[in-house]
Structure formats: structure tokens, C-alpha cells
Length: 422
Image (cartoon, helix red, strand yellow):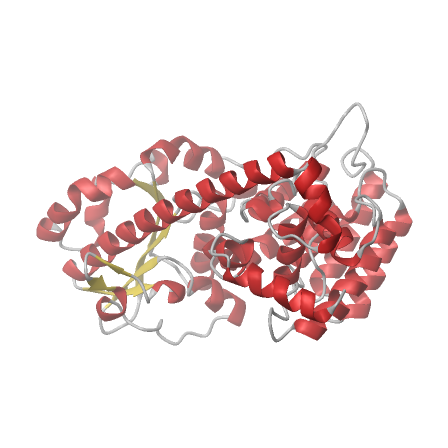
């Protein structure tokens, strides 16, 4: 691959507002929030296998939680869960009914969680490939990417197609050997252009995805796309545009709900903190940076917990003491469970926690919230946490009344749903 050609492709990739570079890699809030949730889910998966509670199906397992977090990462990971669906007729992937293979998979995930060096991860991937577990291929790299994004690139059909077009190769989709060879080329090439992209290999993988999807053309795939994939590429472009518009609408609604929570919190005389990546926002001419405190009070929490907490959408704190009173996660279109995980992380980090936690989402998602809280992964863990659901419409309709008549955070009980959840 000529470096000038690659440089031009990267420039097109970064300048396209609808490319996954802009909608997912640098512009996707869900991506930033996913890393901690996925690591936690992998930990739960390993623990459940060791404890013998993992089950014999993908559905309902902690692994489903992990893959759901991955698949919500927009188009780039849309089909990431499919290779892990249990297919009874084919007995694949053979990590559900075969206890030996299940434990090999757990050992792989455990080693990846604890690895600190590239050679350790490569050894573990080679060991998993050597185990020849039926149906368990390099799609597992999508999990490892979220544990070690600077070492392991993600992997799917579009990325393989993009790689083959960019490097004039013929790598196979389900082959560990092909994946490990691809990884070497990706890492080496990314080092050459890292000043244009990122140390995080997701940026380069996104470039391959766009090429493989036909949205970026190189010499090796122009003819194929134009002659045999033109209609498919046009359909994909329309779908991407529709997704971008929907995401913009969701972001606008998310900002509105954040503003209402800021407004209510200030009316109740609390200090309000807004997620660090949202401080630049404004609504109805009101800048969040001028309405909220710039940082959370210093606390003795692990760095990863502090990072997660700093991304919670809105937090109310007592003026003077800095004690957290209420925390809110707004889930317009992303997975409900990831918001629950962030709330649980915060609750477990606060000694003798007495604060209240709220999932704020569209009215239509109430059943989904209740279903997620009923999952085995959450049911026992959340019994001692005050977690409730606030529908968007309730917040909009009663915002002014809450501001006028509320004395403290308990006024939210008037609009929160969930019965036993409150």
C-alpha cells in the first residue's frame, strides 16, 4: 500500500462527518462508556464459569451482557454477537455444553484481563486457536479489543473485506491464522500513520470497515464496488445517513433531559456535576459549563472507578460537603444494562451508600428497564441499591413543579416508576 494513497484515504475517512471515525471513534459517547462495562462483564463471565453458574446457552448468560455492550457500538460492531449465539443443531460455538471448552474460554478471558504486555495477549490468542474449539473463531478478538485497544484490533466481515482491498490480500474471515497475520500488518501500518489516526487500533479498524462497506474506495475495490456492489453500497450509505440523523435527534433529546436534571438539581440547592465529556453542551442558550461544577470532589477511589463515575450523565451533590445525593443515567437509545452497571460501580465505591440512582429513559423503555433488572446478572447484586426509573415525559411535564415545590431529592419519588425499584 502506497503511503500517499493511504494518507489520502485517511483524510477522506476523517473528513466525512458520517464515517465511523466521527460517529463512533471520536464522536460516540457509547464507546467511551463501554470499556468499563465490558471489562466488568468479562469478569462476571469468568466468575460464573468458575462457579458453575454460566449456563448452557448464550441467552441470559453474562457473555450476552458483554456482547450487547459491544453490539451497541453503532454499525461497526453490529453483528458481533452472532458468532456467540448458541446453535444447537451445529453444537457451536462449543463453549456452552462442553465443560472443558467452557473452562478453556474462561482461562483465555482471565488471562486477557490480567495481561499487561503484547506478547502475553498473542500467546493467549494462539493458545485459544490451538484449542480448536468448534465455532469459536477470531470474533473473540472483538471482546479483547475492549480490554486492550492499543494491542488487539477488532474483527468482522467488513474489516476483512477492507483489509483485502487495501492490501490486495485474501485473508479468510473465520481463520485465527488470518486474523493474527492481519493484526501484524495493521499494527505495523498504524505505527506508520499513528499521527493521523490513533494509538487505539479502533481508528484503523474503522478505516478498514469503511473500505469493506464500500464507502471508501481504493484501487483494489473500485471495480468490484461499482460493478457488483453499487446498489448495496448505496443502500448502506442511505442507512448510515438515516442512522446519523437519528443519532443527532437522540443527542438533542439527551441534552434536553440533562438540562432539565441540572435545572431541578440547582432549584433544590444542590451542586450539579455533568459528565466530563458533556460540559461543552448547552440547551436553550444555557451553557452546562456555567451551571455545573467542573469536577467531582476528590475521593479515594480507584482510577478506573473515578473514570466511570466522571462519565455519569448528571450527579447531584450536597453543597459544602460534596456528598453525592442522586445520580442519573440517561438512556435514550443505548443499552439499559450499561447504565445500570455504571450506577452499581458508583454505589459500590461509596462507603455506606445512601444516595439514590435513577435511570432516565423514554416512556416506551420501562418494560426493558424492568427486564434488565430481572436478569440473573443484576437481580442479586442490586437488592441493596436504591434504583428507580424516570420516564422522559414525566420529567418534561413536571420539571417546573419539581423546581417550585421540591425541598430535596425525595420529590423525585412523585415521578419515578418501578414499584419495588423505588
